[in-house]
Each structure stands twice: as C-alpha cells, then as structure tokens.
Length: 225
Image (cartoon, rainbow, N blue to C red; front, side, top):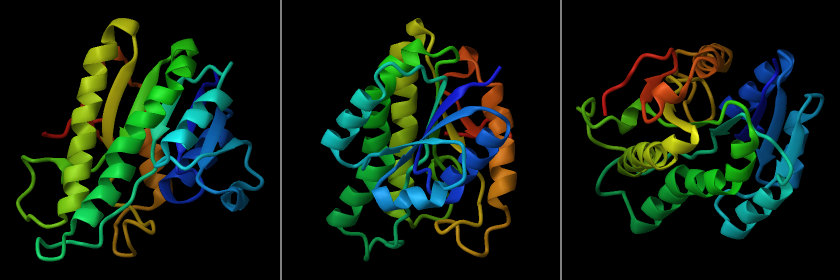
C-alpha cells in the first residue's frame, strides 16, 4: 500500500533521489524546497512541492499550516549543510551557528510543524538524516567540528523525540546515508545516490516502533553513539 512521504531538501542530492525512487514505486511524495525556483529540479516528477526555508521559524510554521489535512506516514528530515571549517583554528561562532541551525534546529522545527500530519498517518515514522561522523565512539580523527557536533546534536534530539512520543506510537531514527557522490559528499565518495537511497528506502520500510531512538547505517545495521 502506498505511503505518503514528506521530504526536506528535496530539490537535489539525496533528497531528490528520495523523491525519484519513492515516486517511481507509487508512493505519494510531499517535497519541501527552500526557494520557488528550486521547483525546477523536480519537474516531471510526481510530487507535491512546498516552499519553505527550514531555517526560518515563521516559514516552517507556515509549512505546518500548509500541511493541514494531510496524513504523513514518513517524514525524512534530509535538508543539511556541510562545514568548510575543518580545523579548530578556522572554526568560528558564526560557522557553528549556521551549521547547527540547519542540521539540528531545523529538523526539530519541521518535526513539530508536521506532528499533526504524522499523527494522522499510518506509519508515524521520522527519519533524521545524520552521519557516521556524529559517532563519538568512531571519532578518531577530530576535525569538522561544526558538522560533527551538529549531527551529534541531531542524534540526541532523535532520542529525546523517541522518548517523548513513544507512547503515541511515533518512531524516530537517525540514519547515516553512507559517503555519497553529492555536492556535499564530493567526487571521491564511493557510493552513488541511487545506491544509498535504494538501501535507505528498504531500511525505512522496515522501521517500526521497536527501532525508535536508534542510530542506523543505511543498510539498517546499528551504529555506535
């Protein structure tokens, strides 16, 4: 039975590949992009497009109003940014604020705005796109302070949400997509977007309330915190 997916950052990279694969198999897709001109990236795809800057609280609140009457089975908080400041010497407060706002604060705001639609959905699943770079246990290289810390914060928020809403049957997971050839992943990444999303879609299909609060690899295997 087709499900309804709400996807942020849907006009390029992993988000666009999510839209392509889910729409192709017959799921209903609600695609969120930041600016009106970015709809061009979704031309020809079976998706309903919403315009919302997920870093703007008022814009996210408006998205929530636009979703009134919708029933969303799966929310994928995919919108994210990397950080160009890899070393301590180059990390600035402004860079920390920018990366945290997109990678940690925005998914929380979008989730809050989408709660009525998620409560009306059948599956009630939220997937926060994280990174293995957020794993404290696996961090042996340092660097990428803003990006690592923001995704680590996203993981904590995922567990907080899982605990708060478990009684309502909502499931929250953080997921690492792999190192993928996108604008963010760069040309040296070993995975194609189609492979990463193919794996993630299969993993998301199997997510249940028993998985809520977990940090998963794209193939469904658990990752260390």
